[in-house]
Image (cartoon, rainbow, N blue to C red; front, side, top):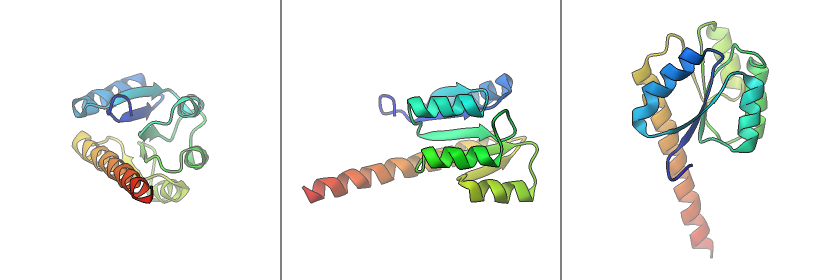
Length: 138
């Protein structure tokens, strides 16, 4: 987290969609990073692990394997997947691959905002509990 603010990596090959998502979540006070495709997302994650990844799956270097690879390098980071090209099978496959949540496009921003907030709040609470446990061990 940058200065106590959660970092969200937004991955989508459509610049307008990245902008819409960033603008729709801006009021929550998150720090945003962006990537255009799966390869750029991996490089970004390797440089600094975000607090949450919000990603399209139908993009260059994307798909279910992309979610598997992300999950392998960031096992505790929530991954929220969105797509306009999914169906029930895609949803099941993506969730099995390690996605934390799935949204069909067009995304309802209020629902997405609520999901992101819940996931980030849960992550903060878990981190706080870990610190408390560590302090108790000393």
